[in-house]
Image (cartoon, rainbow, N blue to C red; front, top):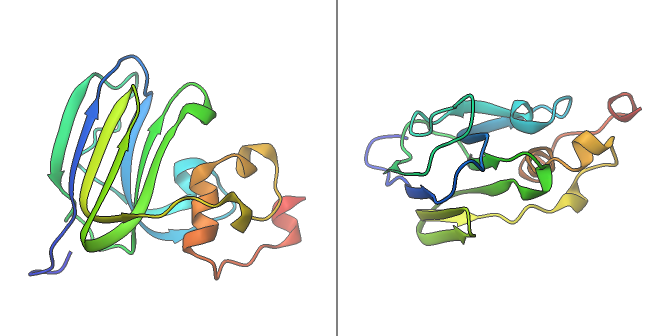
Length: 153
């Protein structure tokens, strides 16, 4: 982030283990629709969140999201079943507060506006793409992306 620009403040508490195989936060600058999962979102990972191999322990992670100037921020908790994954995506907005909570995790991000992920913005694709929230978000956030037949055949 540029100097003198307020940055979102995040607090994430993982309440249960073993639940999340990965817990990552990415500063998203672009979208590559030829991939799904984290690889489709172009950008850098936040150093606040350890990209672990194995399960994420119960812990609280707090910090300022000022490591990178990007139009979008994406938090993802990956579980054994894609339907149970946690997705919090959005962008800086002064004064806004985003909260997400379930039995596994609590998330609070100050100065952040969450953008609900709308699967209808994505074109038809194979199941591994069509069910991927990262991929669906990419189509929403970067609506100038043009689908091609070759991508989905």
